[in-house]
Image (tube, rainbow, N blue to C red; front, side, top):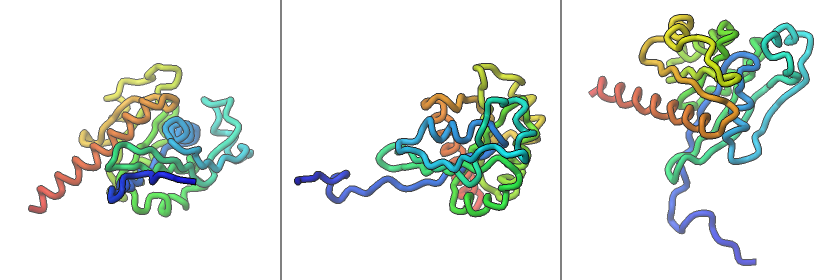
Length: 197
């Protein structure tokens, strides 16, 4: 059987870029990865136990939770392919974050404005790690619960951290959020290179 190569002879494959998707329990991390991934995403969902049942107040229909990671990928263009790693949202799985974040160029922190306290650990983690990140408010039911500047104030993130809205269920919306992460990462790298010159 004659098979054609996936790329032209001599063509380089797209550069792999690792992006972490983080946030609290039930904010839409698994949904975002599933919405955009060009492969069947790897998920590590397990039934919610009594340890996490108390967190389901605003997401009562949620019956599973990520216990290790979500993984998917999307080719942006001929030069860049994103590898997406979704973190578990519960604090008791926080020990995995260091491994998941290793080698990442940027992060997307998803926020549910009904439960902003849940995203503080992710914001703090990336600030302390020095990893560029974008805060993305998930538009549950198509509505924004709070003004974006109020969200920025509540999270105490500086003006150089992009704050956007998106819908984790919509592929193009997730794409735009990931492009915001790339843009922020490259902008920060250029600024650091300029400061070192």
